[in-house]
Length: 443
View 1: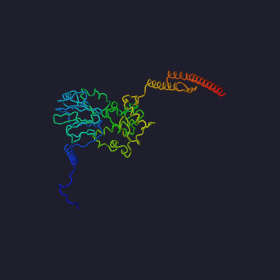
View 2: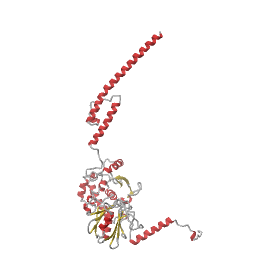
View 3: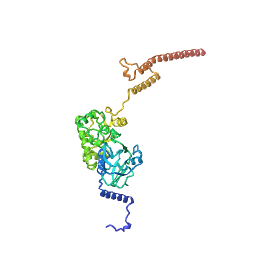
View 4: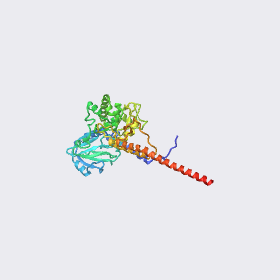
């Protein structure tokens, strides 16, 4: 039996531990009061932005903006001063919440309209309403309201408050007169959920593309709304390697990919981008684990770079057809990824030197060889009778110059030999004369 200890003599709990426990308790209490359930996803893509749009549509449409606070952040607030932004939306009625791809905007009773490009960590928060949260949204239940990362804050006539936050500052908030006719929204391809291609259009467009399939899916001018995790998921479900060239896909693979894009996006949107409700067979749940510890359905997940992004795939199921080697091509493609034009139908993502650049490189190499040959004392080997100018790899003018140098070399060598022979004969005459004079003196 343990000895009894007076309460005032018991060891004290560290202050830091007490504060952590207090914060956790407050978070649980707050979540219980306002009915917020923890929802975690990788970063905002079509399902997350659509969940935010639906939350705004359900809670804010038909209400008037009575207060607006825009952050003094010229990197996120694009091409408009905070005072002009606030004045343009104050007193306006929210008519609708619209979306295309990863972009959302509020349709007001008169232009201009606030537009939100979510970037890597953009998020919509409505006070007291459960809206999808992302791992990188950086706003917790215990944080102050509105958050210090808030870029756009409005209060409505019924007291409801909305905030668009972004900690990493990759998002963009704009004020546009007609969002659909102005960049970046006007440059987007058909929305993967609202404006899907037909199967025939999709297959035909893939057969014309020489890009890697993941890079193509990430190209927002081709299909808008698909981001990194959605691309990984649909390619895994379709059993297609992320680096497979799009034009090399069979009709059956195109059909399977088309079906998987539709199913993955519709399921994610159906559950409000709540990742805890995604099917357990999805690679999504393991794609952020460490290499060697990531598995899906008992099969190992590997990580490569495709389309300029870290990519999760299952080598056992997603085979790369052709003679490409993933490990060998990885570094080369990462180096050329900045020069890749995903909007070009005929571009394979690798820039080749022009004909003029090749000629300049060839002439420089041949000049270096010519200088080295001129400095050398030994004559170069003669050409074989069967060799042509093309076999030497230089242009015509350079070959002629090289031939002239080679023709001069035998004459130069003969002159050197003749001069050397004359010197040797003089030495012999001098040595014989010296020996004769020495004999005479001895006598």
